[in-house]
Image (cartoon, rainbow, N blue to C red):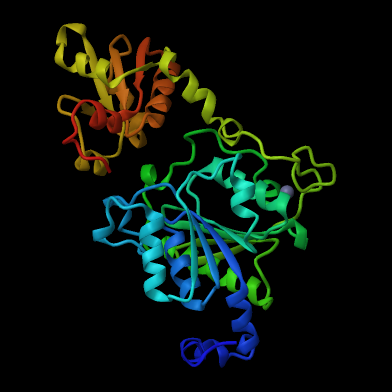
Amino acid sequence: MLNDEQMQRYSRHILLPDVGLAGQERLRSASVLCIGAGGLGSPILMYLAAAGIGRIGIVDFDRVELTNLQRQVIHGTGDVGRLKTESAQEAVGRINPDVKVELYNTRIQSVNALDIIRPYDVVVDCTDNFPTRYLTNDTCVLLGKPNVYGSISHFEGQASVFAPHLGGPCYRCLFPEPPPPGSVPSCAEGGVLGVLPGLIGSIQATEILKLALGKGQPLIGRLLIVDALQMRFRELKLRRDPQCPLCGEKPSITKLIDYEQFCGLKPAVAAAPTNPDEVTVHDMKRALETPALGITVIDVREPNEHRMAHIEGVRLIPLSAFSCRFTELDPNQKLYIHCKSGARSLKAMQFLRNQGFKDVKSVRGGILAWSNEIDPPVAKY
Ligand code: ZN
């Protein structure tokens, strides 16, 4: 039973006929696992705490960085350098000390996902990468847990509820194959409007509360697409795929797999040290210091990235302008190409080779590796 203080705290819920005392009790007995305490996790954790969800698990292994604060509103300036889980736990406690918080300061992986997810009623996907997204989906389907999905990029976001055990599709029904590595820019590569995770995260939090209350029409079988720039909400009907390897009629996936490999990340990483298409930032340094080598270094990032950080002596030709500006380069010239972390430079390299350029290499790790290994004052963004 709720005490007097809790009655007051939740009075605006209790007044709602669809919540009432019984509903508030349901929220208190509910448990939610939040995978990721970043942009989406921030509003979700704050609203779930305020709503009186009884037990909240938080999974994250990252520390708060200055670049997070533009959108990850659960963390403040004084939290930079702290574990995100601990910073988030403190914020949840400030909002509502009744909530029991459980922390997992670890990377969720195939070896621990079942154990981490099993003790919770609802899972909320606040991840920013494909291996963790597929891992979360597969674990939820195998355990029969609803998976409240959200994702964001630039000015656009999506949300849905995946729950094959309740009749809807899973993430794999929608996206059977992960995109090729590097083809979808992360928030760190492509940027994101700071308020967008607030918008999508609030939608996810709403779905969680509805699932816990057993009220309303959940986003099961529907993908909500939000275009913040035009402020348009669209909805796609999603069907469960009878051929889905996970939730279909004849599933071929019956246990967790290697998700890094599934998303094509492992071979690239494993091959990296010997990839003949790539050079290191030390090679780039030598090229810049030794004009006799005759190597021109090109930066293919965008001008606003260049303003945040750049390397002296490197020429900027943004990838977005590459298809018309590559003609400024001599096909017989030796070229090293760098970007932020090494994905776009591989694309630019391939493009130039297709145009008949003979000696082009991509700088592994980009300007981030340069900052880490050569020149730390170069800003990481
Ligand atoms: Zn499926």
